[in-house]
Structure formats: structure tokens, C-alpha cells
Length: 382
Image: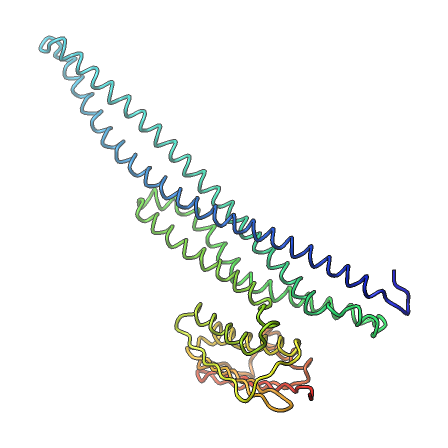
């Protein structure tokens, strides 16, 4: 299709756009499946709660009916032993009463078994839906990674190939960037939603035992607490999807996007206050700079909350004529920079981004005295 000297850029763009459309369509289909599964999950949970209440009522009725049946049997035994002391009507009544109670008890025990079978079936289906939701969210995450990579790094791949004349390191850089993104996403999913959902699956197996051993109230309390865990997992998954690439970054620029992101972080993390400030006249800068600044701030804020256990975070941007300074400071537990492991992914990732932009990074931290990270990124002269 291509010669060594020329490239059919229009054909390449057409192929690229069709590929993006196909991926977006597939992503939408997966998202619809995920949302339908979530709605089914919620409806099934409500149905399960109703069935459990019905089981409780049937058990109580069955226990009361069993006592009445025992009394009727005792009356029948008494009548049978002193048959001559009772009229024919009294004997028949004793037999009929005992028989009626026995039939009713059999019916209600059958009803109890049917309800228990229905409950067990609902619980199995709920576990299956959880697995479907987990798989759908995982696939959506992967699709978002691909879309983020394609739209941010490959839009100008045709021109890059034409100008670079198929440099040998081009493919290596693409693969390295893709694998690094997969590693980051894999770590986030493993440490967050995957562990939460694994916990959900284990706890669903314990609810039935809790019901049998401690009663329906304890079991319902376990279910209520389980709902919170599922909601937290859902919030974490949606946060990861948002983190892949905020749409506002391309439309509004770095400052509005950072404000929205930091506001969302504060909303999802009660007890943490984030103070944001942008000095001098803010301006739009090239997309790769805006993405890098966003990722640097995002990494610092995430580290401050996850590892620093802070209560306050200060984020400040200072716009200079030919550079932008970014400061992220927290009041957390801090750390000793001298003993930070060489394979610390967060710090390594920030250093790599700064090196690509020809910028500098300074990290100041002390145990129990918080952490301050300063970035200086040179900007191209207008």
C-alpha cells in the first residue's frame, strides 16, 4: 500500500477513523450491557430481600402450625385411648383436626422449601451478574486505554511516519508506552475494584451461613453492608475510567479540568480538603503539555491521599512568560526520600514525564511533616 518514499495519508486517516468508530461502537455496546446488568442486579437484590422476608414469615407460621399439629396429635392419642368416653362426633373431630393440621404443615413446609430454592437461585444469579459487571467494566477500561492511546498518540502517526522515515525506535516507543499504561491500569484495578469485588464474592457465600446461624436480621445487615462495598467498587471503576482521559481537557483546557478533578476528588474523599490556586494569566498550551500537567498533579494528589494520609492538599500553578511552575503540597505523614525504592512507579512515572518535556522536578519530604513536589516545565515561546 505504501512505497518507501511516499505515504497515502488520506487512506491511512480513513482506516484510522473507521477503526476508531468501530471501537467506540463496541465500547457503547459493552457499556449498555454493563448498565443493564447493574439494573438487573439491583432488581434482583430487591427480589431477594422480599423472598428472605417471605421465608422468615413462612418459618414463623410453620413453627406455630407445628405446635398446633403436636397438640392435635396429643388430643387424638387421648381420644383413641379412651374411645368409649367420647362421642362419635368428638372422635371424628379429633381425627379431622389432626389431619387438617398435618396437611397444612406439609403445605407450608413445601412452600418454605420452594422459597429457599428460589433464594438460592437468586443468590447464584446475583453472583453471575457480579461477574458479568466486573468483566464488562474491565473490558470498558481496556477499550478506554486503547482509545486514549489512539486519540492522543496516533492522530498524527501518518505524518510522523513520513517525516521519521520509519525510524527503528518508533515501534519500540509505542509498545513501551502501551505496556506502561497497561501496567498502571492493572495496578489500579488490582488494588481497587478487583479486591473489592473479590471481597463481595466471598461475603455473598457467608450471608447464607449468617442467616442460618444468627438469623435474618444479621443476614440483612450483612447484605446492607455488602451494598456499600459494591457501590464503592462501582465508584472506583468509574473513577479509573475518568482518570484515563477527562474529556474536558481537550474542550476547556487545564485549569477548568483541574478544578473539576480536584472537586471530584474532594467529593469522593470526605475529610480531605484541596486548595487550588492559579496565579497570573492562564493560557492554553499544547495538548501534550496539558495532559502531562494534569497527570503530574493527579499522581501527586493520589499519592498524598493514598500514602500520605493527609487532610489538606495545596495545588498551585504559576504561569510565567516561558514556563509554568506547579507546586503540590500536603500535610501528610511524609517519607524519607533517601529510602524510596528505585522501582516506585509513581515517582518514576513523574520523572519520565518531566524528562520528555525537558522540565525539572524537586521532591521535599520529611517524616510526619508532609511532602512538597515542585515541577518546572518550560513552554515554547509564542
